[in-house]
Image (cartoon, one colour):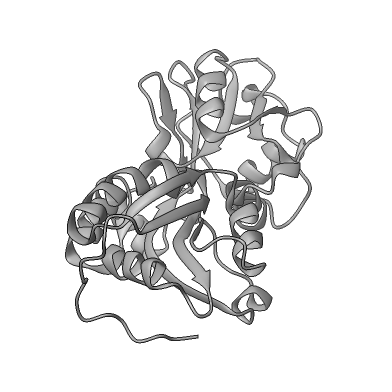
Amino acid sequence: MLVPSLTALSVTPVSAQLEYVGSSTIGEHIIPEAAEAFTAKTGIRFGGVQVQGSGRGLDLVVKGAAPLAGVSRALSLAEKQRRLYYRIIGYDAVSVFVHGDNPVLNVTKDQLKAIYTGRIMSWKQLGGRDARIVCITQVWGAGRAQMVEFQDHAMDGAPYREDRKEVDRQLDQVTALLAEPNGISAVSPAFARPGIRALAIGGFTPEPRHIRSGAYILSRPLILLAPVPPSKESRQFIDFMLSAEGQRIVARKFVPVR
């Protein structure tokens, strides 16, 4: 459902508050700086930021229990038909990281699927060391968007291998990978740290030009959404994120839409 954009951001008394729930990618890497800039411009403060995952955020907005949520995956057709006000504010890649000491540089999509479904169990099968591959993922039951997107796009919907190591959040995935030389983990590039390295997939790395062109297959939209009708504060914040200032904040770690 389309709602006309605000032509200007009016100043609201500082008592007004807005809360965010949902995607950790958006909540940890966009909201903190964006909230500070938005408050300075409008007087609307953020009363809380909860990163419980895209699925949880979407569910709360649908129920009318949250004014603003972040979803870091594409919405399904059924979800788009719900009473939601939503806007894509940027794009992210799901990068497949390995330990910095791993000699493997590139995998194909079929090889990636085989790793995560258990058909390829050793790095030796990919030209690497004779060592068992350790898959590090988030907890499946938490409804994290990154796991759903990866399963859909990299695994063609096939189930994850059962012997993977599960952790709570993407930051925990990186911490586990740093301690596991034979590990592999799919996370947003925003969580990258020295000591891990992104694999090319089919010869393409997760660079902005490859994400925009679709050459890098593991990309996803970053979406802000609110109930219909959105609150004044939610609508103002979404409009702010699509403004030049908001898009500059997105561009610090992601690919902006404008």
